[in-house]
Image (cartoon, rainbow, N blue to C red; front, top):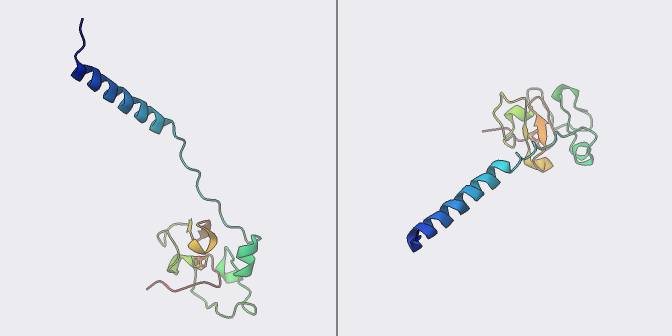
Length: 107
Ligand code: SF4
């Protein structure tokens, strides 16, 4: 049987497409960014606490009751998400109930 140029090309294209699909399906899901810990040097610099009520108010007088990551403009999740990324910490996950000195009230 003689294979035409067109069907050979079609076969090659579909083989490449199938191989690509396989490669994509084998790609492992990217690991979720790590949670920021209070002991992280950057977290300490900015006074990050996973529970805003434990912020050292003497050291970080900018803190006011009611402020937390969930209502900060930098919080990358919904206010109802327990954790979400924060660009201040390279996208690491911060607690919605947390706070740091870079807090900026969401408009
Ligand atoms: S910048 Fe905002 S969202 Fe990020 S840790 Fe500080 S208070 Fe939380």
